[in-house]
Length: 292
Image 1 (spheres, rainbow, N blue to C red):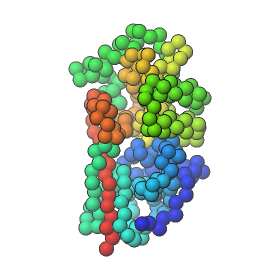
Image 2 (cartoon, helix red, strand yellow):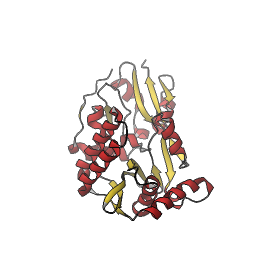
Image 3 (tube, rainbow, N blue to C red):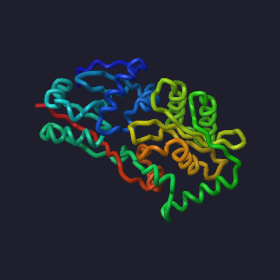
Image 4 (cartoon, one colour):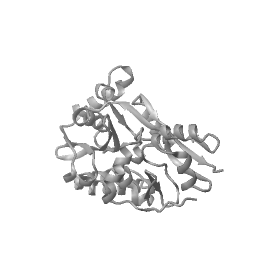
């Protein structure tokens, strides 16, 4: 139960939101403006601005965690005011979970959700790919560069049709599912408003003028870039590993960290993400609030 007044996400309030997002001590990929905008229709997202925070809700009335300067907020008055009854806050970054559990020990609990952990990697490591632990990655990249006459170039707003067509080809290679269809809609939404989403960037690998792989990314902090979508067509062996490295090498080498998002509890995805040897995680929690 909450007394917040929610409204649909809008580009007009993007700057207001981004100011709050940038003031967060930890920038989670879930809460980047690009993520929210791309998935807003799929999840029915709405937001409310109150008490110096942005509060987000999905269609099923799931409350997300607040976005803003957590460390400066008066949580002892904010939480009872906004949530007079019990409530759950989902997808809480570890920094926020620590702040709230430290301040409201007897009224809030935190449950760690492993499937939502975000994988943090060293950009330098994923460009260099040194040592035995990355030998398979180097081998796949050699396979790609040896077998294909390719070109890497940065991605931009004028590539909307190219990316959407590549995504459709990628989808056609798989068993169609609701999850993959939703992801394709999110790709289309992001490409459609590229010019209005600050910090978007990306790269594309083309073989004889046709797309082989692409990456859409977003700058979420001064030293961090996150990967929204990374796709490669099956005809181009090694293209996944190649686009991963070439995007960072050619377009994102100035960043220290790359956030490769969560694994959603999918074991295959977890193995793939761990194979890139993360240097850390942004952990997330479900918070349960119990007012006096």
